[in-house]
Length: 239
Image (tube, rainbow, N blue to C red; front, side, top):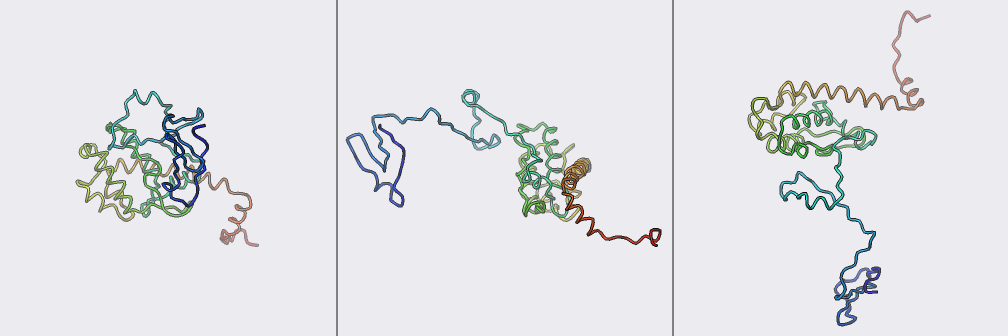
């Protein structure tokens, strides 16, 4: 045949390995290519590709092109049965004590309510701001959060919605980023209604998923925990 299974010699320069085996043919290892024959693709070949629909540096793919592909939307949600997802979602933004998923859920709702262009594409993904650390001890650095997340929200998402019913207290990006520090970082940068919704979400998430984590402990682990718990003397129970 004109094209056979590849078996390229290792540790050799590819150009040096090419041999002319005829007027219209070349050979590289076990691969023989005839310039008079079109490239042949096997019938079982599949092409998988991902696309960031919020990338503003490329033209939007028109419907005529998209109809020729089998498209699948990747859901922007946390898979709580996946430990990597769960640890990322419950990672606290350092001194604030607020978990990432509480902020993400609240801000994504605000983005949808603000009716910004392509609101779905503007919303924050679970790993938009990846936490640092191991397992359930992951944390998100406040300075990195401010410089990446808050800057993105200010300059890209809410650039036309900063006054009136906006969510920020700051009047410029420098104040927004610089004031986001210490345990009261959110109170210094966001309006009260946003903070209230976020704190309620944070409370609900931790009550549900941290409680589930405790319930999943084995009897042995529970017994060890009980054994380590200090016993307070109660005179009413004394002999």
